[in-house]
Length: 131
Image (cartoon, helix red, strand yellow):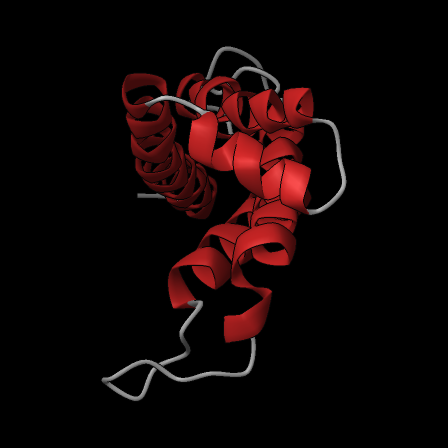
């Protein structure tokens, strides 16, 4: 397999992994309701309607990644979603370790880092478009 094909397969794997894993969080919010997110947003002094932005970051953007449709934009939406999630829900854990000695926010950090990597690398050729 040539170098370009391996790079494209690597990008596809990154897109699919991030897209599917974040989408599962979005589907859970669709099924369970948005009241908890609305409460967090309002507790931060923001209008509750902004909570529905999480659906952009956890449903629309992951679908963009999975299908390779403007995946750089989708990746940046996931990254913004993760920064907001860390700021609203996880700021107290920022410097903490979990019970196994890993960072308490390793999942959020992995989602954020992977999203930024996809935004920088691009989606590769296996998708609806290459942007």
